[in-house]
Image (cartoon, rainbow, N blue to C red; front, top):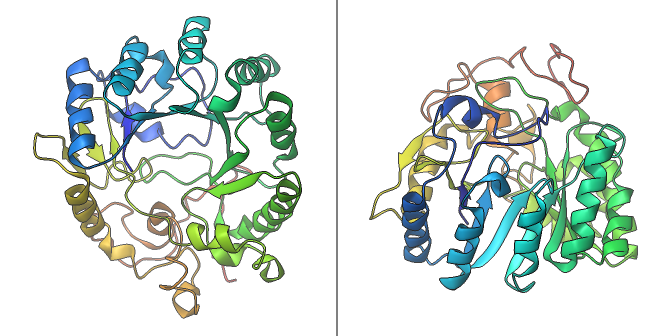
Length: 345
């Protein structure tokens, strides 16, 4: 897969945002030009990728968003739009015209406890309008985060019957709110219970990057087999293209390596270069005991590469050659407080 980050602008300020590094580092290059977009479409075709995936920032804020979606559809691509759902009426009307079998809007939902009520109402209004074009997503950044409202929204608005679940991961060069591994067992149990409730209602869970099988209760492994098979080994280069035409492996690894898009670029070659750049953390895991685990290297790659670098390497960014070091004291746990204790289990 490959993502086109068409803008760094956003109308939200989520404390766990994985794109925070790029928003601060790109400077004035906040909007992808039409020329770069067309070069990106050619790259996707060259790489035999059949889906245009638009993200930001908030991609619907790009003034050429409608043109980009129309161009992608006309070129025979399907569309995946990563959005917070806080989009204008004009954009909603535009997306209503896209056939629902050609478009998926992955809507990053707001926490009903901590979110702004008016924004939650706006999200649900978009769900009601776009219905089967919408798949809900949630980033888990703290313990006790409510999730069952997602099941109710899917049924109330007839949305896609799948939820994409991600763990908030750390940025290498800045502080953001992320879920510390010491809370993985608590979150894993809650997600296993949520998976069971979702399955009872015919709703599937899909796992984003960074999960490790050991965070889930062993007694739930049989029912979670499909989720575990994908989640433990899915930390790989996402191939995010920034608005100015530079590729990064993924947003948390924004400063690890950057590769410019040219007329010969292919996804296969980008993956090779980015895998080489982070090869030094393959033998590490997010826990000190990962290398002794029988799942390591088989069903689990040890978790998010950015999390490994933040926890076990000094300095955290070293152009793919991280050194061995003690666990950093700069971590932030799921409640946002500094954590200086070394994880022992």
